[in-house]
View 1: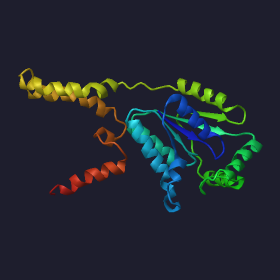
View 2 (view 1 turned 45 degrees about the horizontal axis):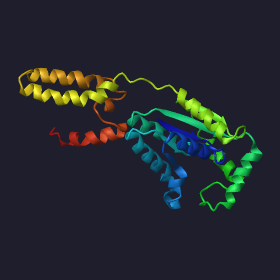
View 3 (view 1 turned 90 degrees about the vertical axis):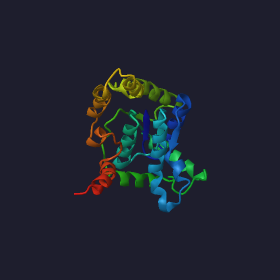
View 4 (view 1 turned 60 degrees about the vertical axis):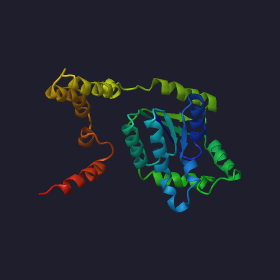
Length: 247
């Protein structure tokens, strides 16, 4: 699972993300940890770096928590693409603080922490965040939980999120056995051909029975051709072959 935290500065998402990571044993990739290491002129790549790191963990079969405000649709869609490439489920935990006095207190307490300049340490920057993101509203179309961090303590809120995560439906993949075992079945075909148990037509038919269902199940033409990534990646990769053809 790729668990995306969402919410404005000071809403409590990082505290919850870290507590979830501690309890579940899931790595927490914090966008601000990446941003802290980058100069201002390239600070915008922190989202891309966070998702790239998260994607690597997903491909290793691990669940990951990505901690960021997730204020823009482009970041959300990028996260969905990365999760899809790793065949990972995506869920979003959105944090809010309904008590403005408590919210202000959290923000103002940051001013004495010696944080890097990009961190939100005054209330005006919270207002600025809402002004920027209000222009690009988007709909979260995956399992989505909103928690109010003003009304309960960290332990209670974390337990609510843990209970919700345990109930998030995991869609079944009818082709999971093929993905897991097909390599073994393919490895058995060549020896069978060499022993004369099947002829070349039988070999091709057996290969077809293994790979055709996986390609037919793909959602896009490029996935159907065995290529992950975007349509642009697919066109670029195939363009070299097209240019080499003598017309």
